[in-house]
Image (cartoon, rainbow, N blue to C red; front, side):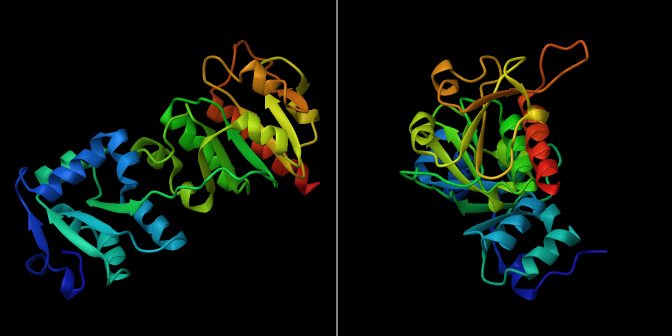
Length: 272
């Protein structure tokens, strides 16, 4: 059975794009394919009904919705459209929409939103997570998701970390972006010098086991690059170095998994 959509979202009432030469399609394709274009334009793409719904719940309606004909048949998409009567919706031929989507099996809806851009504060307080030069989008998305789930509100990424609002990071974050204060291009050394709480540097097999460290209260937990870890300069500014004991025969943990362990050790300590 065809999904029920509001009358003003019926196919005959929407602008429909079927040509690859259409300027609106080409502009959206640039956004989908180019990190530089996303940074320059200050726009991000939310691919999928879950991300669009999360954005609406936390921030508001997207600036624009790209919809596929297949998406019109999706009950979740229809219900979401019904909750956004004022949003501008453009219908794309399925073959064009698949070029815009970053997933193998698109749900048929992409939201175009302004990328939140927060300036680095002169001083930072409260519990937070700092990421230095983490390159893998899946790792950053996973850490953002864990941070949001653990009740952390602020995540700072260094200038050489992957763009937090890239499609792959957004997909891995599963909506966590909209529950966080994300500061990109941060000078972590400068933040460390003015931070009012305690700073924890995570390392491999060095320092204090994380389960023995005090993680409650205002604490900044730092995680470094997948291969190199934290730089010595940033590590030197920490009040304490912590590591995750690994009795098994493995050299290290994925940084996303390591972050989840540290953040939820903090949650455990707060419950005591």
